[in-house]
Image (cartoon, rainbow, N blue to C red; front, side, top):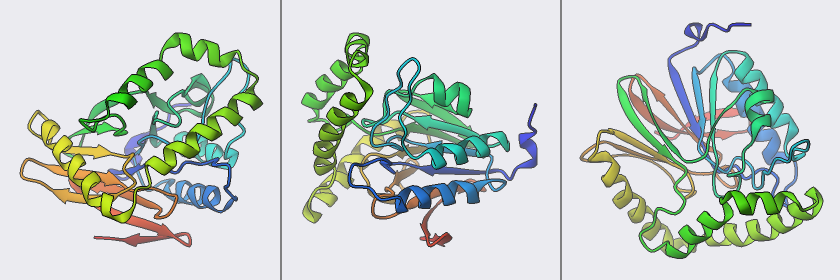
Length: 257
């Protein structure tokens, strides 16, 4: 069945860092994300999930994680209704596989991409490994994403593999939740990183990973940091060429300006 996306509003949504399936999760956050995606149906032409939708995701040949199935179901419905849904692999869920592409109908991106919407040229990246002093993480990233490492990990029983991933995810989240005095430092890092892209052919950059919500007009373009859904439930709309930051609370949209 061919779906006519031209009938949808020219509005683009961006989210990141829901980390669904954390070991200490209850269902409330998954339900919040599911209700948000359900609300998006018919309201947007494109949705970009900029990494770490899941706290862990690894597909075997015939087994997929049983994480937030109602969220996956809503993404399936959203894609079937005509919205183009693109999901990026983050540092927690990089190992996106064919199930999300072929069965759910999502476009999967493992690194970065550039897109054009509403006469804006936008660079999108999850944001991990971009700090100048992230040498150790960049080495680890190459090891974890190496085809040999992925093959060896696939030899583990899914339950055991998930247990190992949960331990590493917990350590990673502590790293990404710095004390308040570090927030300004992290923000300044992303401002500096964004300038390199904004001086190229892009007039906007969109990052996840930092868990900081921000829409900021810089000298050379717009910097967008998507916040998270662990504590903030933030997302960004692009409409009429302008980025706006919003919060989803109690099944309602709140405009953060």
